Image 1 (tube, rainbow, N blue to C red):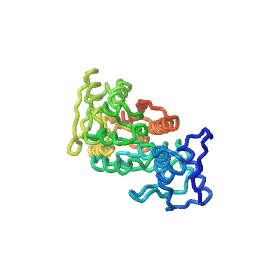
Image 2 (spheres, rainbow, N blue to C red; image 1 turned 60 degrees about the vertical axis):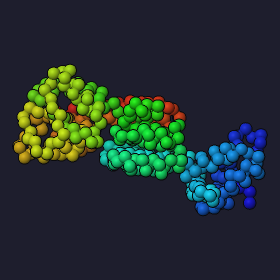
Image 3 (tube, helix red, strand yellow; image 1 turned 120 degrees about the vertical axis):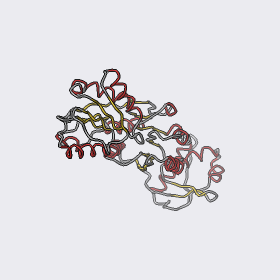
Image 4 (tube, helix red, strand yellow; image 1 turned 90 degrees about the vertical axis):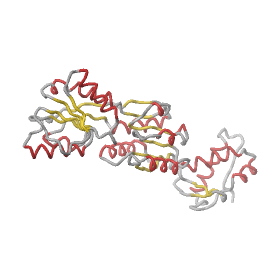
Length: 332
Protein backbone atom coordinates (compact mmCIF):
# COMPACT_ATOMS: atom_id res chain seq x y z
CA UNK A 1 0.00 0.00 0.00
CA UNK A 2 1.52 3.30 -1.14
CA UNK A 3 1.26 5.90 1.63
CA UNK A 4 3.28 8.77 0.14
CA UNK A 5 3.13 10.36 -3.29
CA UNK A 6 5.60 12.96 -4.61
CA UNK A 7 5.27 15.05 -7.79
CA UNK A 8 8.49 16.67 -8.99
CA UNK A 9 6.91 19.63 -10.81
CA UNK A 10 3.95 20.47 -8.58
CA UNK A 11 5.39 23.68 -7.10
CA UNK A 12 4.68 22.39 -3.58
CA UNK A 13 7.79 21.77 -1.45
CA UNK A 14 8.61 18.07 -1.18
CA UNK A 15 8.35 18.02 2.63
CA UNK A 16 4.84 19.49 2.41
CA UNK A 17 3.87 16.84 -0.14
CA UNK A 18 4.91 14.17 2.36
CA UNK A 19 2.74 15.81 5.04
CA UNK A 20 -0.24 16.16 2.69
CA UNK A 21 0.13 12.53 1.58
CA UNK A 22 0.12 11.22 5.15
CA UNK A 23 -2.83 13.44 6.10
CA UNK A 24 -4.79 12.23 3.06
CA UNK A 25 -3.95 8.59 3.83
CA UNK A 26 -5.19 9.05 7.42
CA UNK A 27 -8.38 10.72 6.17
CA UNK A 28 -8.96 7.79 3.79
CA UNK A 29 -8.70 5.35 6.69
CA UNK A 30 -5.62 3.63 5.28
CA UNK A 31 -3.56 4.75 8.26
CA UNK A 32 -4.90 4.25 11.77
CA UNK A 33 -3.61 4.90 15.28
CA UNK A 34 -0.41 3.00 16.08
CA UNK A 35 0.23 2.15 12.41
CA UNK A 36 3.88 2.44 11.44
CA UNK A 37 5.11 4.90 8.81
CA UNK A 38 7.80 4.15 6.24
CA UNK A 39 11.26 4.79 7.65
CA UNK A 40 13.09 7.99 6.75
CA UNK A 41 15.70 6.01 4.79
CA UNK A 42 13.01 4.18 2.80
CA UNK A 43 11.28 7.43 1.79
CA UNK A 44 14.64 8.99 0.88
CA UNK A 45 15.57 6.10 -1.40
CA UNK A 46 12.14 5.71 -3.02
CA UNK A 47 11.79 9.39 -3.97
CA UNK A 48 15.47 10.44 -4.19
CA UNK A 49 15.04 12.91 -1.36
CA UNK A 50 17.51 14.22 1.18
CA UNK A 51 17.20 12.97 4.74
CA UNK A 52 16.59 16.56 5.92
CA UNK A 53 13.52 16.87 3.68
CA UNK A 54 11.84 13.77 5.08
CA UNK A 55 12.88 14.60 8.63
CA UNK A 56 11.36 18.09 8.26
CA UNK A 57 8.01 16.56 7.26
CA UNK A 58 8.03 13.99 10.06
CA UNK A 59 9.09 16.61 12.63
CA UNK A 60 6.19 18.89 11.69
CA UNK A 61 3.72 16.02 12.02
CA UNK A 62 5.32 15.12 15.34
CA UNK A 63 4.95 18.70 16.62
CA UNK A 64 1.28 18.66 15.68
CA UNK A 65 0.79 15.47 17.68
CA UNK A 66 -0.12 13.35 14.63
CA UNK A 67 2.87 11.01 14.81
CA UNK A 68 5.41 10.01 17.43
CA UNK A 69 8.84 8.37 17.35
CA UNK A 70 10.19 5.34 19.19
CA UNK A 71 14.02 5.54 19.12
CA UNK A 72 15.48 2.67 17.14
CA UNK A 73 12.08 1.50 15.87
CA UNK A 74 10.55 4.28 13.80
CA UNK A 75 7.53 6.59 13.53
CA UNK A 76 3.94 5.71 14.38
CA UNK A 77 0.52 7.35 14.12
CA UNK A 78 -0.49 8.99 17.43
CA UNK A 79 -3.65 10.83 16.34
CA UNK A 80 -5.94 10.81 13.33
CA UNK A 81 -7.04 14.42 13.99
CA UNK A 82 -5.22 15.87 10.98
CA UNK A 83 -7.24 19.09 11.14
CA UNK A 84 -5.09 20.17 14.11
CA UNK A 85 -2.65 22.66 12.57
CA UNK A 86 -1.25 24.07 15.81
CA UNK A 87 -0.36 22.10 18.91
CA UNK A 88 0.50 24.61 21.61
CA UNK A 89 2.40 24.12 24.87
CA UNK A 90 1.09 26.65 27.42
CA UNK A 91 3.07 26.97 30.66
CA UNK A 92 1.61 29.15 33.43
CA UNK A 93 2.98 29.81 36.90
CA UNK A 94 -0.21 28.92 38.82
CA UNK A 95 -3.95 28.57 38.42
CA UNK A 96 -5.98 31.58 39.53
CA UNK A 97 -8.88 33.59 38.18
CA UNK A 98 -6.57 35.90 36.20
CA UNK A 99 -4.89 32.98 34.44
CA UNK A 100 -8.31 31.45 33.78
CA UNK A 101 -9.33 34.64 31.96
CA UNK A 102 -6.07 34.57 30.01
CA UNK A 103 -6.46 30.89 29.11
CA UNK A 104 -10.07 31.36 28.00
CA UNK A 105 -9.03 34.29 25.82
CA UNK A 106 -6.34 32.19 24.13
CA UNK A 107 -8.85 29.37 23.54
CA UNK A 108 -11.43 31.77 22.13
CA UNK A 109 -9.03 33.43 19.70
CA UNK A 110 -6.91 30.50 18.50
CA UNK A 111 -9.72 28.79 16.55
CA UNK A 112 -10.85 25.19 16.25
CA UNK A 113 -7.82 23.84 14.40
CA UNK A 114 -5.53 24.08 17.41
CA UNK A 115 -4.87 21.97 20.48
CA UNK A 116 -3.64 23.64 23.67
CA UNK A 117 -1.99 21.65 26.45
CA UNK A 118 -1.75 23.67 29.67
CA UNK A 119 0.78 23.10 32.46
CA UNK A 120 1.77 24.88 35.72
CA UNK A 121 5.26 25.21 37.20
CA UNK A 122 4.14 26.65 40.59
CA UNK A 123 7.30 28.82 40.82
CA UNK A 124 9.44 25.68 41.06
CA UNK A 125 12.58 25.73 38.88
CA UNK A 126 12.91 21.94 38.73
CA UNK A 127 9.28 21.53 37.65
CA UNK A 128 9.79 24.32 35.09
CA UNK A 129 12.87 22.60 33.66
CA UNK A 130 11.22 19.16 33.49
CA UNK A 131 8.06 20.42 31.79
CA UNK A 132 10.06 22.26 29.14
CA UNK A 133 12.37 19.29 28.60
CA UNK A 134 9.41 16.90 28.20
CA UNK A 135 7.67 19.28 25.77
CA UNK A 136 10.69 20.04 23.60
CA UNK A 137 10.08 18.99 19.99
CA UNK A 138 6.48 17.90 20.57
CA UNK A 139 4.68 21.20 19.87
CA UNK A 140 4.38 23.75 17.08
CA UNK A 141 4.44 26.70 19.50
CA UNK A 142 5.45 27.29 23.13
CA UNK A 143 3.78 30.03 25.21
CA UNK A 144 5.67 30.41 28.48
CA UNK A 145 5.16 32.46 31.64
CA UNK A 146 8.64 32.38 33.24
CA UNK A 147 7.83 34.77 36.14
CA UNK A 148 11.08 35.60 37.96
CA UNK A 149 12.42 32.05 38.12
CA UNK A 150 16.23 31.93 38.20
CA UNK A 151 17.80 30.40 35.07
CA UNK A 152 14.43 30.37 33.27
CA UNK A 153 16.12 31.69 30.13
CA UNK A 154 18.62 28.79 30.16
CA UNK A 155 15.80 26.25 29.91
CA UNK A 156 13.77 28.28 27.42
CA UNK A 157 16.78 28.55 25.09
CA UNK A 158 16.70 24.77 24.60
CA UNK A 159 13.40 25.14 22.70
CA UNK A 160 13.12 25.94 18.95
CA UNK A 161 13.93 29.65 18.94
CA UNK A 162 11.29 30.63 16.35
CA UNK A 163 8.43 28.88 18.18
CA UNK A 164 8.64 30.50 21.63
CA UNK A 165 6.44 33.32 23.00
CA UNK A 166 6.84 34.91 26.44
CA UNK A 167 3.89 36.01 28.58
CA UNK A 168 3.37 38.40 31.51
CA UNK A 169 6.95 38.90 32.72
CA UNK A 170 10.14 39.30 30.74
CA UNK A 171 13.74 40.27 31.40
CA UNK A 172 16.86 41.29 29.47
CA UNK A 173 17.82 37.65 28.84
CA UNK A 174 14.46 37.00 27.11
CA UNK A 175 14.20 40.19 25.05
CA UNK A 176 15.02 38.37 21.83
CA UNK A 177 11.75 36.42 22.14
CA UNK A 178 8.38 37.80 21.03
CA UNK A 179 5.72 38.15 23.68
CA UNK A 180 3.18 40.19 25.60
CA UNK A 181 4.26 41.50 28.97
CA UNK A 182 3.29 43.71 31.89
CA UNK A 183 5.48 46.66 32.86
CA UNK A 184 4.94 46.28 36.60
CA UNK A 185 7.04 49.29 37.61
CA UNK A 186 5.20 51.58 35.21
CA UNK A 187 1.78 50.08 35.97
CA UNK A 188 2.04 50.65 39.73
CA UNK A 189 3.60 54.10 39.31
CA UNK A 190 1.04 55.33 36.75
CA UNK A 191 -1.88 53.81 38.66
CA UNK A 192 -0.87 55.59 41.87
CA UNK A 193 -0.48 58.87 39.99
CA UNK A 194 -4.05 58.57 38.71
CA UNK A 195 -5.24 58.04 42.27
CA UNK A 196 -2.92 60.69 43.77
CA UNK A 197 -5.64 63.17 44.74
CA UNK A 198 -7.45 60.52 46.76
CA UNK A 199 -4.22 59.24 48.29
CA UNK A 200 -3.47 62.72 49.64
CA UNK A 201 -6.31 62.24 52.15
CA UNK A 202 -4.32 59.48 53.89
CA UNK A 203 -1.29 59.61 56.19
CA UNK A 204 0.75 56.65 54.99
CA UNK A 205 1.00 54.19 52.08
CA UNK A 206 1.88 50.57 52.92
CA UNK A 207 2.69 47.86 50.38
CA UNK A 208 2.41 44.23 51.49
CA UNK A 209 5.15 42.58 49.46
CA UNK A 210 6.20 39.01 50.41
CA UNK A 211 8.41 38.96 47.32
CA UNK A 212 8.13 35.26 46.52
CA UNK A 213 5.66 35.41 43.64
CA UNK A 214 5.30 39.14 43.24
CA UNK A 215 7.39 40.86 40.53
CA UNK A 216 10.04 43.16 42.01
CA UNK A 217 8.89 45.88 39.59
CA UNK A 218 5.79 46.41 41.75
CA UNK A 219 7.93 47.38 44.76
CA UNK A 220 10.20 49.57 42.65
CA UNK A 221 7.26 51.45 41.13
CA UNK A 222 5.60 51.90 44.54
CA UNK A 223 8.74 53.26 46.20
CA UNK A 224 9.50 55.57 43.27
CA UNK A 225 6.00 57.06 43.41
CA UNK A 226 6.17 57.63 47.18
CA UNK A 227 9.59 59.29 46.93
CA UNK A 228 8.71 61.43 43.89
CA UNK A 229 5.48 62.71 45.45
CA UNK A 230 6.69 62.79 49.07
CA UNK A 231 4.29 60.26 50.57
CA UNK A 232 5.21 58.55 53.82
CA UNK A 233 5.46 54.85 53.01
CA UNK A 234 6.47 51.40 54.21
CA UNK A 235 7.00 48.01 52.57
CA UNK A 236 6.17 44.99 54.76
CA UNK A 237 6.71 41.29 54.10
CA UNK A 238 3.51 40.10 55.76
CA UNK A 239 0.38 41.40 57.43
CA UNK A 240 -0.45 38.61 59.89
CA UNK A 241 0.18 40.28 63.27
CA UNK A 242 -0.23 43.88 62.17
CA UNK A 243 -2.98 46.23 63.30
CA UNK A 244 -4.57 48.67 60.91
CA UNK A 245 -4.26 52.36 61.86
CA UNK A 246 -6.62 55.04 60.68
CA UNK A 247 -5.32 56.99 57.71
CA UNK A 248 -3.30 54.13 56.21
CA UNK A 249 -3.63 52.90 52.63
CA UNK A 250 -2.66 49.31 51.84
CA UNK A 251 -1.39 48.41 48.35
CA UNK A 252 -1.89 44.65 48.11
CA UNK A 253 -0.55 42.53 45.20
CA UNK A 254 -1.67 39.18 46.71
CA UNK A 255 -5.35 38.34 47.24
CA UNK A 256 -4.60 36.24 50.34
CA UNK A 257 -3.27 39.37 52.01
CA UNK A 258 -6.33 41.28 50.81
CA UNK A 259 -8.56 38.79 52.67
CA UNK A 260 -6.41 39.16 55.81
CA UNK A 261 -6.70 42.96 55.72
CA UNK A 262 -10.48 42.84 55.24
CA UNK A 263 -10.87 40.33 58.09
CA UNK A 264 -8.71 42.46 60.42
CA UNK A 265 -10.71 45.59 59.56
CA UNK A 266 -13.89 43.85 60.66
CA UNK A 267 -12.29 42.77 63.95
CA UNK A 268 -11.16 46.35 64.58
CA UNK A 269 -14.50 47.80 63.52
CA UNK A 270 -12.92 49.84 60.71
CA UNK A 271 -14.67 50.73 57.48
CA UNK A 272 -12.76 50.37 54.20
CA UNK A 273 -12.57 53.68 52.35
CA UNK A 274 -13.32 55.75 55.44
CA UNK A 275 -10.96 54.66 58.24
CA UNK A 276 -8.32 53.30 55.87
CA UNK A 277 -7.83 52.64 52.14
CA UNK A 278 -7.11 49.62 49.96
CA UNK A 279 -5.70 49.23 46.46
CA UNK A 280 -5.57 45.66 45.17
CA UNK A 281 -3.69 44.30 42.15
CA UNK A 282 -5.53 42.50 39.34
CA UNK A 283 -9.23 42.87 38.68
CA UNK A 284 -11.77 40.16 39.54
CA UNK A 285 -15.59 40.21 39.54
CA UNK A 286 -15.67 39.82 43.35
CA UNK A 287 -13.67 43.02 43.86
CA UNK A 288 -16.56 44.97 42.37
CA UNK A 289 -18.74 44.08 45.35
CA UNK A 290 -16.49 43.16 48.31
CA UNK A 291 -16.35 46.00 50.83
CA UNK A 292 -18.62 48.07 48.57
CA UNK A 293 -15.97 47.86 45.87
CA UNK A 294 -12.18 47.40 45.93
CA UNK A 295 -9.98 49.79 43.93
CA UNK A 296 -7.64 47.86 41.63
CA UNK A 297 -4.64 48.33 39.37
CA UNK A 298 -4.98 45.72 36.67
CA UNK A 299 -3.82 44.66 33.26
CA UNK A 300 -6.31 43.28 30.74
CA UNK A 301 -5.70 39.52 30.62
CA UNK A 302 -8.27 38.95 27.88
CA UNK A 303 -6.37 41.43 25.71
CA UNK A 304 -3.09 39.71 26.54
CA UNK A 305 -4.47 36.40 25.29
CA UNK A 306 -5.86 37.97 22.11
CA UNK A 307 -2.56 39.67 21.27
CA UNK A 308 -0.36 36.58 21.74
CA UNK A 309 -2.70 34.49 19.56
CA UNK A 310 -2.63 37.14 16.80
CA UNK A 311 1.16 37.09 16.93
CA UNK A 312 1.17 33.31 16.50
CA UNK A 313 -1.38 33.29 13.67
CA UNK A 314 0.36 36.10 11.74
CA UNK A 315 3.89 34.93 12.65
CA UNK A 316 4.78 38.34 14.10
CA UNK A 317 7.80 38.61 16.38
CA UNK A 318 7.05 41.70 18.47
CA UNK A 319 7.41 42.51 22.15
CA UNK A 320 4.20 44.23 23.23
CA UNK A 321 3.54 45.95 26.55
CA UNK A 322 0.01 45.12 27.67
CA UNK A 323 -1.98 48.10 28.90
CA UNK A 324 -2.94 48.58 32.53
CA UNK A 325 -5.47 50.81 34.29
CA UNK A 326 -6.59 52.04 37.71
CA UNK A 327 -10.21 51.22 38.55
CA UNK A 328 -11.31 53.48 41.40
CA UNK A 329 -13.97 52.18 43.78
CA UNK A 330 -15.12 52.88 47.33
CA UNK A 331 -12.05 51.36 49.01
CA UNK A 332 -10.09 54.52 48.16
